[in-house]
Image (cartoon, rainbow, N blue to C red):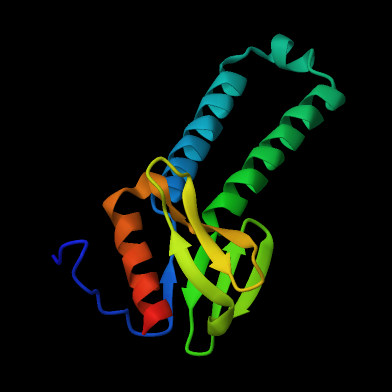
Length: 150
């Protein structure tokens, strides 16, 4: 593995970076939540289940769908390097940048995700590279930097 100061070759294009920890946590906790709720529901006797109104049942379903939509948005986040552009998907929003528009990428220690510096003076979060992924995220930033400079 090259040191941080050594140049890193960019990956073959197209290349996609996705968060690993967020996807695994979403799958694990989502499945666990479904199992616990289902177990609790079927553990109730018929009389207790009958006391839940349709509104209360609907509320539980709506909350479950809300949880799913947030988890899905986080899990679908990605950064895709293509030959002619960089595609950044953060949650439900997709942005496409020409390579000349992206000046740099940063992942400061403790940051939740990488940040792209853009030519217009703004910055854009790149949630597809999550700081919680540790060395995997650092490698992704080095690869993306290699593509930006090369």
